[in-house]
Amino acid sequence: MVAIAVPTLLLVMGRQSYQQVDAELRARAAFLGQDLLEEMLSRAWDESGYSDPLGPEAGEARTACGQGPGSFDDLDDYHGYSETCTWDGASFTRQVQVCYTDASAPDECLASGTTDYKKITVRLSSQQLGSLSFSTLRAKLQ
Ligand SMILES: [Ca+2]
Ligand SMILES: [Ca+2]
Figure 1: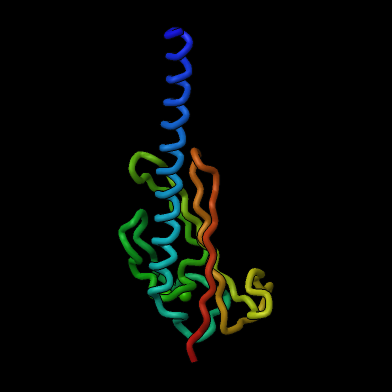
Figure 2 (figure 1 turned 45 degrees about the horizontal axis):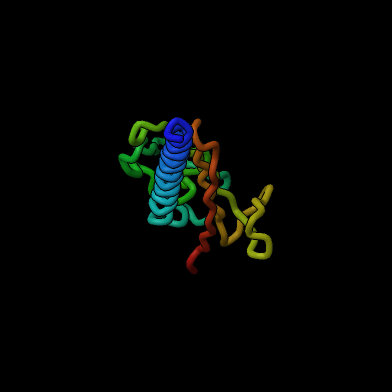
């Protein structure tokens, strides 16, 4: 009876341990995605009104891996930004897309033109978790 109970107990403990690690990685991933989104939302809407194309201006760069915005001073500076960093022993990649969108279809990026709305997407991926995406919309204040 004991011989049967022990393997069952080990199996349950192994599953709980796996689920706990997975939950911790997901919590870390959610924090990293939200953290970068908040940093972006704290920047100015644009450096010159309605930048087109979007991206950093000459000489601007972000300090990678949780060290802050560096010289990125407006929201669309982050367009195309990518970094791979290790936090708490796990490697995560964060990739950013910023695009103009229309209020009537905020999930879709416009192929061309500018509007008062920018859609921000942070894609976070890790070998252990796969990928997660975080998106938000920011409107230009008049
Ligand atoms: Ca800028
Ligand atoms: Ca810019």
